[in-house]
Image 1: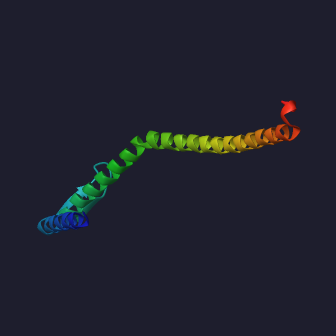
Image 2: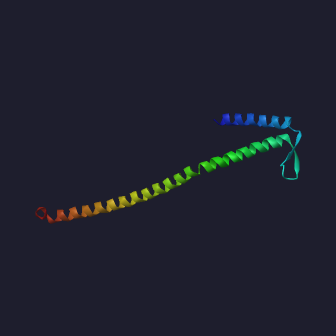
Image 3: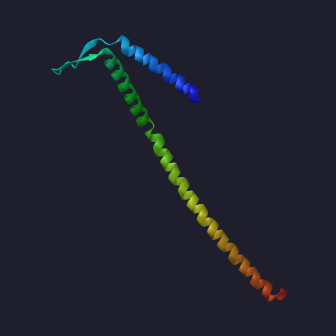
Length: 115
């Protein structure tokens, strides 16, 4: 599996390098209402757009999955509460067993006519 990742990474690197080499010419980048224009290499514009797309996609995925994360936190808290309740009930059960055992021991000490 690691070999496949390395191969995919190498292919992506070769593609990115060839894209950068073949698109070295400069282009004017400006936002119309703003008064300045930047002259940058075309590959920088392409990689910048790809980077912005990855960031925007990652943010949108994070935003969309917020409800899932919130539900997971809520369920985790609920599971912790239930585990604490189970532990308390086990302690109570042990205590009740000890009391029942003590009561049976007292009956056994009194003899058969006490029953």
